[in-house]
Amino acid sequence: MRRTVFQDEHETFRARVRDLIETEVVPLYPEWEAAGRVPRDFYRRLGKLGIFGFGIPEEFGGSGEKSFKFNAVIAEECARAGVTFGGASAHLALPATLVTYTTREQKERWLPGFVTGDLMTAIAITEPEAGSDLAGLRTSAELSEDGTHYVLNGAKAYVSGGAQADLVLVACRTGTDGSDRRGGMSLLAVDTRAPGVTVETGAATLGLRSSDIVAMTFSDVRVPAGDVVGGLGEAFACLAEIFPQERLGIAVGAYAHAAAAVHLATEYVRERTAFGKPVAAFQNTKFVLADCKVTVNALQAVVDQALDAFDAGELTAEEAAATKLYCTEAAPGVIDRCLQLHGGLGFTTDSPIARLYADNRASRIFGGTSEIMRTIVAKSMGL
Image (tube, rainbow, N blue to C red; front, side, top):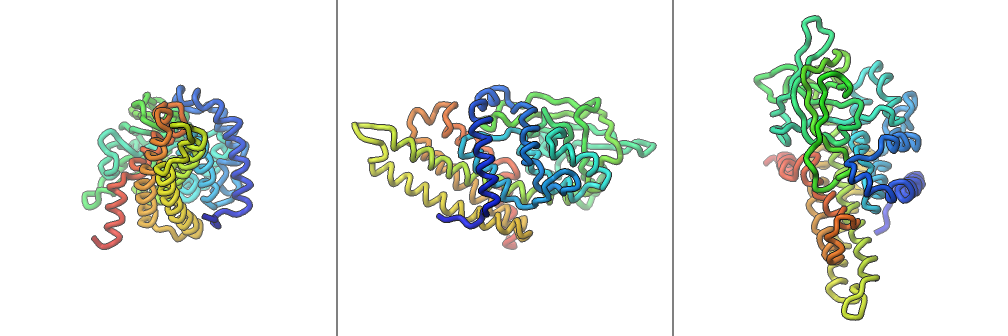
């Protein structure tokens, strides 16, 4: 289907990203997956290309460009090649929060390095016993008697980009509010070099193996009082800036994975022969890929509408949840059928289709599980 969501500037950017991926990512990606992270210098490379400047005002070194469609281009091109930019995905999710909820002094300290990749960021929300139920988190921070700093204690799990992050936004309790489980929750910007911060090797993940996903513990970590982001008790307000964009980004990624799977399978069945003729010649192959293409068309329509709404400031939290739910639930079936058409090759971990299959599985968990998305949508319906 003809797309109208992208303009000339997006397509020019797409060509740059595609060239970067083909020349600097694909040849090295198996090494990155084995290491569990991308090289730190690659983040600086992304900074030089301006990829970290979206959403950041020009006075702090950014492009001033607020369109999320550039992020969508990155997701589509990574999926097309069956790769990721590692922990950079977490970094790219934070401009809205770091611009909206930081003070002038914080912006001057953090944003220039954010843009260049010299200061990488991540966000730590999930805990070993508090995932989807954010109000159940136990990590806490107490203000010192002299009011100069907070003392942070707790543990976080599944921190994407955590091992190479310089600054981590940590959701924690800085107070209590008996009438509101969400009350008393704040975001602290924690320097990962501070004493008491420990980065632990996370559990091996099924997919996203280059994404630097780790666990972190905080033991009596001193965090300057001036490093609260958004004000005390405002964690949920800050996260409200992250969740719709994050969920839209995951939806875009799911669509892109499905589209890439159809492309890979179509090319493969044209080349692969069975019983003396191309696999593409069999009616079953044609019907499977036709069904997959129809689903991809529908996914594309939903994603493009959401991208336009987001850039216009009109995508609600409920619509973002619905978009994520539909895309992440529909895409896996497409990818699975396309993997099936690859036969044994599809079951080898170094094949692009297998990588798409594994990476995509996280989309129904990260950014809020499908069950949480259904809860949000149902609530918007008055149920």
